[in-house]
Length: 226
Image (cartoon, rainbow, N blue to C red; front, side, top):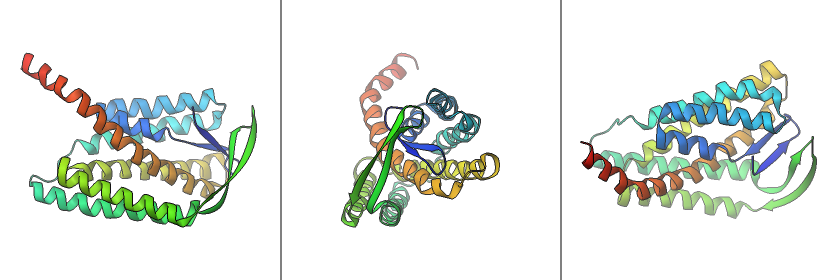
């Protein structure tokens, strides 16, 4: 709720709430992820006055949080070398997604409506060059590759889990807006893809940082309580 951008075409809004949905699911598992995603996001819709979205959000983002938490716990590979190869190609995929979405949707002159109809809105015009998205795509690829090679070879599977959960969210809102609310749902697809991308880029470092801080404590707890 802290940072929101109103989308007049669908009477919805863009935010960075996906960051906490993904972080909750990755740190605490599928059920807490479902609770955080569904109930937490639904309450945000209610408190901000977007009542028509609340029932859909409860289901759509609840499933999203559950999927991310459930998939992230799976371990499809046993060999470290395969994990690193997999993560390398996922890094290529993430860089490509950031590049394509950024250049095709968010480059050039973009109008952003900040605020809500209930409290008044203001429009800001931003200009983002293609070079910005190319640099961000390269940064995402390089970061993924280095993490996979040096720190965590399984990071690619975590990223894929988030992307699959995000895909469910994008598809879910498209169907909900198109079939139930009767809005121009296609207008919000790029917005929701942007939410997934930003949520991914912010949640992975956040999760890694929290695990690094809590890791020794968890290990100590396991030793005391075998």
